[in-house]
Image (tube, rainbow, N blue to C red; front, top):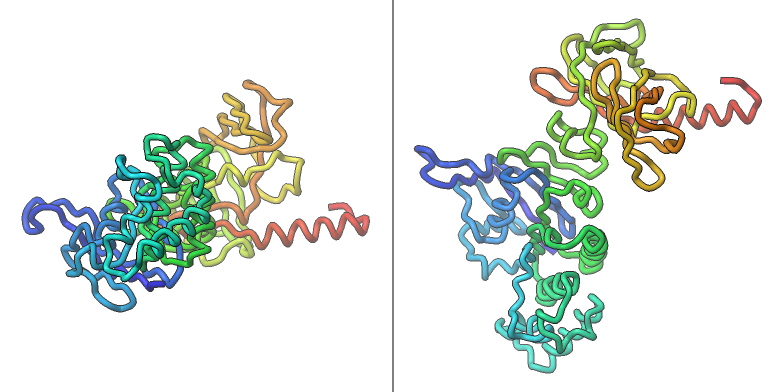
Amino acid sequence: MTHLTVDGVTKIFGDPDKDGVVAVDDLDIDVEDGEFLVLLGPSGCGKTTTLRMIGGLETPTSGEIRFDDVVVNDIKARNRDVAMVFQDFALYPHMTVRENLGFGLKREDNGMSTADVNERVEEVATMLEIEQLLNNKPAQLSGGQKQRVALGRAIIREPRLFLFDEPLANLDAKLRKTMRTEIDELQSEVGITSAYVTHNQEEAMTIADKIAVLNDGALQQLGRPEEVFNEPANLFVAQFVGSPDMNIYDGVVEEAADGVRVELDGVSFELPSDALDAEVPPGGVNVGFRPQDFYQTGKRRADGLTFDVDIRVIEPVGTKAIVHGDGPMGDVTAEIGEFHGLSAGDTLSLSIAPEHVYLFEAETEALRKGRRIENRASVQSQSQSSESDGVEI
């Protein structure tokens, strides 16, 4: 296992003193031994360039990349002992699966005999459940089988690092979900430090130990998936992570007797002090509501903002539905469970708990209040306890 450090790394394509393009800007990332890092962001944000610098395919303009405190900036890719899996499976078409898997071992001066190589090939093939395909060529394989072979070719060398560059992008949705689960399980089993590039936030939230969110070459946030979701560092992270997108509205914060009052177009509500992690100064804010945090008024204890929405569109998604409508503050997107009696043109009453409201500073877009889950659990527990005692809430 390897401790990976990206320390103040900048990559500029072209002349840095003239019109060079800054692809990565002063990036700091620390990945512990055995951790699964996901580099997440939109196209052109610098995530693939970062991965290529870690792998030795690009050279940083400044800063250091370290493996276990050893600077590897000047070490060539073939000498870094990393294994890369690309969006293109990059299998040798004239070789069988067995030959593709064993090719890297035969090239290396590792003292392995042909029997040793074959034993290792069969061991990895069994791990990936492709042992019955060892005599097939790539043209005879499905997309998922090709991806397993590509993974096996990386695993078989037991490298210091796994580097994945959108390896599931060419697979259909169902197979993509299956393969990302297998990659996650496989990485946990072999325990090799890994970096994975994707623009798909669902993939990132599912498989990452740690997520680095990038935009315009700059790191926006580095943290565990639940941290990035519940406490996004800024408005960009909040809107990029989470599906459907967060509802964002312009608002103003004012002081209140016990906390603050938030004024939006058409509605206002109070956030009590116990729902705030830190002081929220008066002034302009961006107010965020995640669609998953809405509930239909009357279905739960109503202790937060409540408003009516005129439904425009209902999108059923299994046992839930995404509802798009017009509220007093503008467009509203909500994810609800009980939707079968609703249709376009109906009015839906929605509520959201104070601890689930996000606040971002208007000018800097930095987070002022994130999503808290402790209060909601406490309120529900108290409510259930009171109901069991016959107390009306």
